[in-house]
Length: 316
Length: 233
Image (tube, rainbow over all chains, first blue to last red; front, side):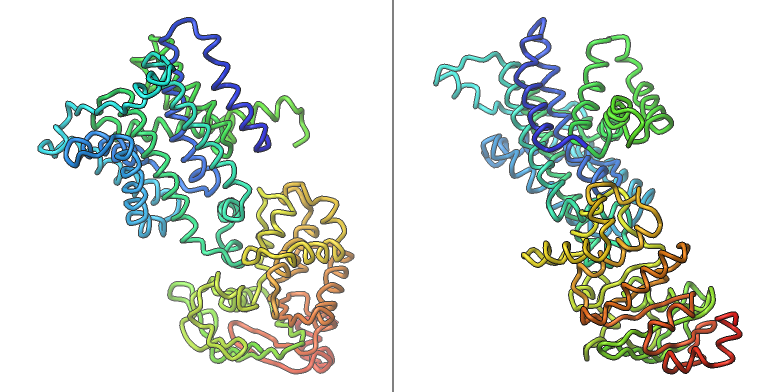
């Protein structure tokens, strides 16, 4: 296990140093997408990696976060930044309501129930055209922070600004998740992952703790959805779609669902591949399925732990 | 301290406990012996709250426990080392012990951990290793000390000798005996009737979901029926 400080240091260096190697400004855009995905996947690390609960519907929360940034400013006149926070709170509240009955289910049932939830959200977003303007998507107002930075003399291009903004958001998200890992709650989550019965016999309220992990990971997904909407200045119901949920789970599994650093590498690889190798773009879904299958067959701990084990030799 | 009256429990439509009466007094070591399938583990699961009770009552220190959820029972002083050890294999030895003290965040946690390490020094040696890498005996030691970290006044032990080498069994029974000095009352469920009766004050014999005999450990050890059926003497 890579320690907390080392992980944070690696992530911070990656965020700060990567731009020196960018051949063109297009790469800032990819970098920022990696961080947005990394943020959502970090939330899934808490849910899947720590607590061992599978969700196939987290894009639904991204949809809630994203559309909050479009609808709340338009209808209630909220600042888009505030709208993102309100969206996160809303997602957390919905996760709490939905999670209470769902988290009594185990394994496959939980996956199917969350799958249903995600599809429900994306259908509502696509069909309630009076509010969401339907499948064609809706415009999202500018965050306005870039203009403020310009006033104080920091002149960044649009993609540069979003690179740094998402990068900072991701590192903060990673820091929170890493702190959780070693906290009593994090330990208890990892314990119930191993054995729910034993967890109960040491005094852990398993149902409540699972619900907490679900709510936290929903907030991560919601903020990721908001970031995506704000930087694209546009959002469509696809953000909440089933494929988006699967994409995130695959990133988590590929990188190694148990570690934040692994989540980052999973997000980085699966975000970059379709962008850089345009050949892959058309076959993205096949690629995702293939990656998932290969992971399950050859490295069930995920890429990072498997590679680390190879490096360290045979001792575990 | 612990009173069980007419306890019934079922798996689906099959009732496995048909009205158990049992009492454990403060400071005692009480053992429940019986063959495989007699309902020993189910009894303990009911006591720790992970198995639903369909009839009868459980009282612990004067309070009705029948409907208290499992995770609350530890806080009242009733801790369990569950069957098959059930340690958290993906966590380190030290993390396992800390989880035993999940309800507490004071200085006593460190002190209790040192006590646990003194009890089984091997655990101290391996404190930073994944608990899944421990041998069966070491896992059992961890399961017992983890339960002790929860500061129980009454400790429920489910087959601590299961599948272990005789020398380890002796060591574990020695530690169970020492619970008297720690002011921890023990309810010990065992298939190894002889070993259990030798360290216990009193015993119950469980057969197909019913208590068929009870008495002081010395009486039971001397009883010809017990000697034939369980001790193989």
